Image 1 (tube, rainbow over the protein chains, first blue to last red):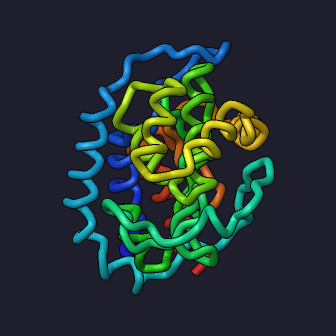
Image 2: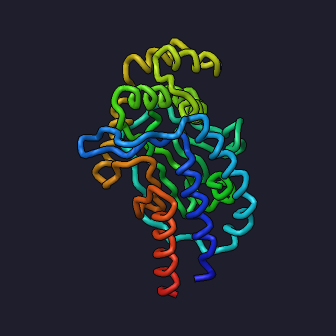
Length: 122
Length: 133
């Protein structure tokens, strides 16, 4: 189990980051209606940034030397988008600065681990 | 945290739209995709994480502040050019059992909403991998 300690660290960090993330809406009932209150957006964004900063050092340098999670089929979105070249590049601001992106995807397209966040801006 | 994992090349991060809150959810998703057409997807993403303004005017103002072609942006937004895309993501997520937000999946597995559930998911995966040698 120890050899996968980084996975636990990943889970902790992601869980906290997602919980703090401003992109989440609340849970919904069977009719798709929200049923819970939500943390104010700016507060969540600040918490996310804080958590990212605190935990980045904990993980950096550790993940690269551990074994990757086995690759599995990647979930695909629906719909096609034209002119993808104009929609990709390198992020030039914030905590993602320097990372390659293509629309809603950040990072190496061939990365072995795919983290998908399903969220609602509202 | 996620960004650091992405920087190592170990992971990539993807965002999928869930439209649980009706027109405001759709408006924000459409605006983000229209911003994405001009290379500003993540600018819009981050903006909508810190605002409650989901109006057309707010979206166009953001586009202007990012020096986008506002005519192109407004037409994209008004025409709901990416409605099929965002609704398709929502529909695909629902079909995959995702309804609550935020939900995170790693390599297509699990549906963790809170930290404890995600830890359990990762621990189970770690145990499975170790058992496989």
